[in-house]
Image (cartoon, protein in one colour):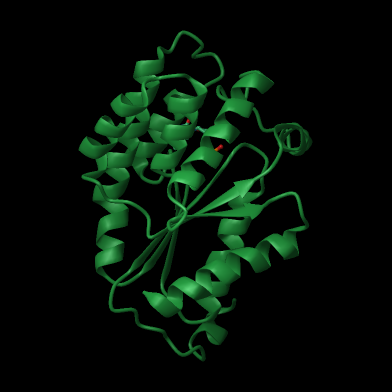
Length: 222
Ligand code: TMP
């Protein structure tokens, strides 16, 4: 939207901010959907912060680099777990908490559920250890709503190959990613009030519609 158009939009003030996370395996299109939702909310007059994990801060970008370098094959699973959490601490402190306090809508492309799905269900690290480290990193702060973009692993892989995206975790085999997907679905089953599943196999417009339905419901109740 152009600057001149922005001033015509009635600004929508929220008493309290809303924290939304987008989750899913590789190739679901969640990053595009996060951008589209952010644009739609801005058009409706909301103040929006679009961010990501890992890498939502300057320090986080450095941590992301360490985490995703394809040649860091020797990284231990525990190092990986702690680095994702370190990134999250910085992200919350520098960006998320203050924005929520100011009444903004924060959309993050990945948050704690990624750690549970990838390091927990994918790598096989004990789930209770993951949850206790998450408690230290987040102090129990969770998204108001999480949109889980669900897609079969083979389709996700094909989509990613199309855009030539390769990082260290994407180099893992198909079995790893299947465990991650199953993990996500389990999280959704355990927390149905917070985690809403959207079928990411349909077209971009249909997925967007599904996301908007979830979002508008939350804008009404929060
Ligand atoms: P992205 O490509 O969606 O930005 O995510 C970066 C990679 O990091 C992706 O393969 C998922 C992975 N990841 C974890 O394994 N654990 C986490 O806690 C997070 C946030 C991401």
